[in-house]
Image: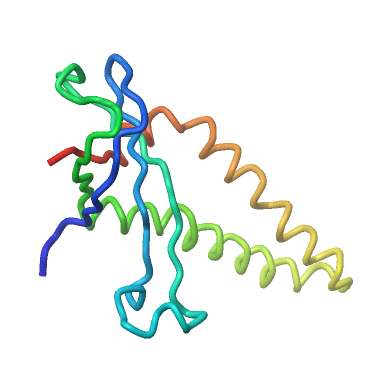
Length: 137
């Protein structure tokens, strides 16, 4: 098993140190012959930014490139985006249930506790951009 995630994409725009690449993210079953008749097969177009490209002059708009990221980057992204917020939500819900009897208020409080977390992620976006990097192969 490879320790990289890779997608083929098309360069949309070129900046001094960044490439904007459009990739087509498809589900695993989209390559099935019956995919056109099935609702489970889906694909989405996404744009990824590839920072730290040393020589952007060698890339042109419309060029096909392969974008890669490590499995560890993907795991860390899932951790920050889903696991930690879910743990915060459950922790506030269970701890708050000992002190607050109103379930609606408790649910709102649990969701409101995620606001500082997401604000913190937003404020740290520069550092996160350095850690969650894509590369061009």
